[in-house]
Amino acid sequence: MGLVYYKGTLNVGTNSQGIYLSIFPLFSFGLTPLLIPWSAISKIEPANQLFIERFRLYLGSPKVKLILSKDILESGKEFLASQGFEWI
Image 1: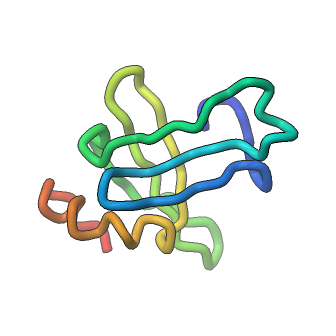
Image 2: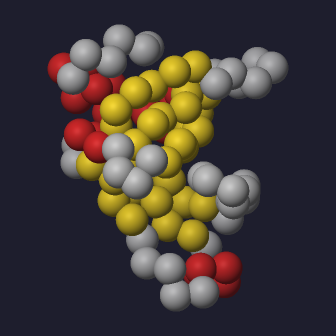
């Protein structure tokens, strides 16, 4: 996310409200968990790598790009489709 590469230390969850992000406590250094509401997503585009289906999500303000695998976004499929994102 941004200039930081959190592979292996970022916990990602989704629910009907949005995408939940938290960093493994050993590496969080006071960073609190974050809930990104589905409505904050302005654009979704494929960001595939080899055989892994991934998507780049563009978030509103501040402008942030977040790349997540397809399986993580499954629980938000209905909400995203209702907002005009036909990506799966």
